[in-house]
Image (cartoon, rainbow over all chains, first blue to last red; front, side, top):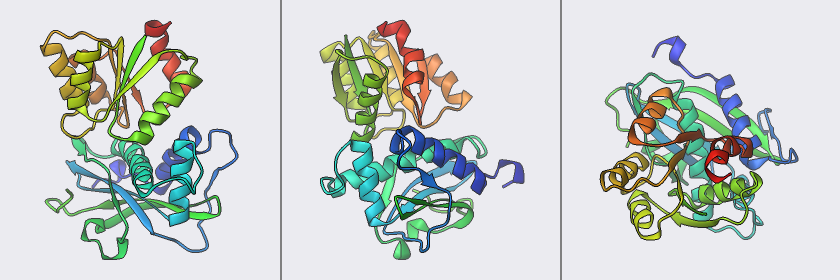
Length: 158
Length: 120
């Protein structure tokens, strides 16, 4: 990948902050704080595959607590009311929106896959690749992470 | 007016519904589709006045659904609400017959700008 086409951590921060301002922090009371959390958590990892002129993944990872808070904020309900399906839908959609914006920074033509949500990140072959950039943040006191992984061309991304 | 919201994500259908309300479009009848095939079915059966559709959906994508509608003579006003807003996609959407493409993340102001000419 050429340097001019590679998304950076700053790009991810800008995209994530736009998404938060639009959907998760509309009243400015739950900002995404661009400070690395004390400890990263990958309880829930949502991702979209990008394939075509570039192959890889755009991922959103967070703690279980943050995933429930995100689903609750997006659905307008309490965190104790959201189902596992709500969490998967919410995190998947966050990955989809962020992935769509990241895709505009990648070589064309590329196709965005449908979002997937994985709960065992450490042992999941789908979630492997060479990390290009990462944005770590804290949201509601919980770890939140956006990253882009590149897979070798011809590698499995579906 | 009747508005058909098509997105495979319930979360996003709800965000679109909330954004329509924030943009001042109260009082319209809202119906939903969970994929492109259901979009085509409901667009034909329920005759909405406007379709707001995601692009990337299972069973049939939004652009495939739009093309299917137009091929069958259904000319319901159609706009995309999607996570990708490249010029190539905007051109493809326009060539398929879409009136607009709103890229996610969107705001109520972006909805007003595109929908006021249609919904008033």
